[in-house]
Image (cartoon, rainbow, N blue to C red):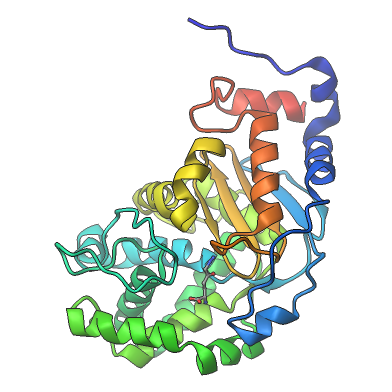
Length: 331
Ligand code: DON
């Protein structure tokens, strides 16, 4: 049995807040990447914003930088909407419409699984629009309220939608409308194209902060119960299935690299957020709106790499022995 490294005494003394501050300092200087501009409103974000927040399953929340600056959740909504759909409609119904295979393609790729004629997974646009279609069919005119309520319960506070970003995407999202029409043609989408796309654009436009993402992540880490409010938000089985797909597909065509280097289930959004889940331990939320070519936040990736390395949080890291490691940091 190889030796398991222990945390140096001086690092333990930093505490969780100290660990975040050091990660922030090491990663904040990277000015590379560009703002998403294919949704015109997103190009107005302040590129300098950067925040890292962490929430533990015991309810501790710490952060550094711009952790209270609101931005739109964008594709991170795909993970939470999938969790909601699994719970509301059942695994079999959802699996009949959307697969769970990594596609290796860009998030907005116009490609379906050739064997099943269904979207590869719920984290790419085709799969997420299908999931929104399932929710639109199941909840009708109430669908967005149901989504907003559940996202709010996961964050532990009442969230709201950014009307301007919603309109900006609704007016320019021709590619997503095209994908929805192809899904309809392939028989994957039961809902009306307009209903599915409308819900998808609305859920993407929900405003969150890095702290919200950390708490949402902690709710998933805490097998569906929000550790701050104590409310049961998602069913256990739905959480397990969602985390599995986040692990294999959450970072699109970067998912393999992410699993290798960072090793926690995660989901990114073009608004600049990344939500990560350290199972049974932590939620991590980052915000920095400059994106790489794959649509993932540059400094968000750097911060996750640094933080998970620093704390040994990779799911297969020998130092990740469950909450004992974190307790040492939080002493
Ligand atoms: O489908 C879209 O274009 C957006 N509303 C969401 C895309 C997104 O966030 C991709 N993530 N990196």
